[in-house]
Image (tube, rainbow, N blue to C red; front, side, top):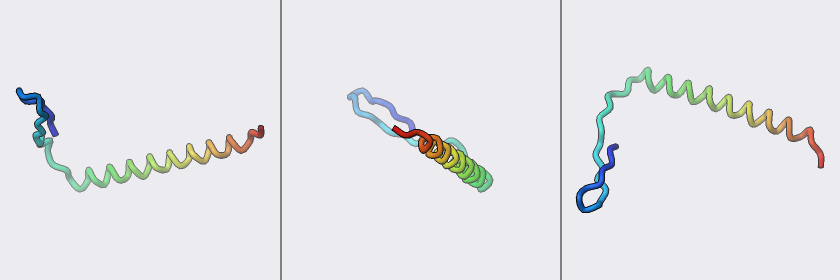
Length: 56
């Protein structure tokens, strides 16, 4: 999406064609998403384990 301001100051939106999406692209993005979710979960578990070691 391209956003421009016309002479009267209003915003105009225009679609931009950036190419096509292949099935392999979607599969790669889904795999990357799974890997990132695993990393996030591991970080959260580490954070929970570390915070349990402290008592105030």
